[in-house]
Image (cartoon, rainbow, N blue to C red; front, side, top):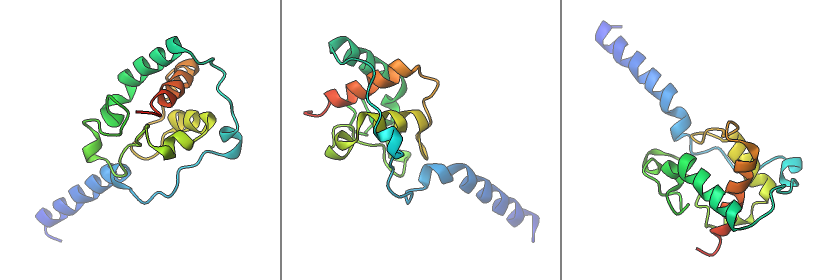
Length: 134
């Protein structure tokens, strides 16, 4: 193989390896394990908790999920699959435990957010719930 072509093949292989997780759209349904779905939110709901969840989402999630949680953040255009629309019936149908598990573990282009303290992740779940009618 000629050196120029060999270099392009190597560069393309590296690019596919790096971008694969961002473009892997055929991952199938994203469901939490049954035990995680059954978890209940230990953080009591309330306006202060929703505000804290919104603040945590603005710091950690807005680039992909957007300022209103519709999955239209500035980074969303480059992602496949697209970030979830938190206002959608599909997301709102997830249990609190399932949302918490998804936030905690991530998948594909969505990173795991286990470094965010658990109470904040549960507050994000309350914030997502607050978007139901929007």
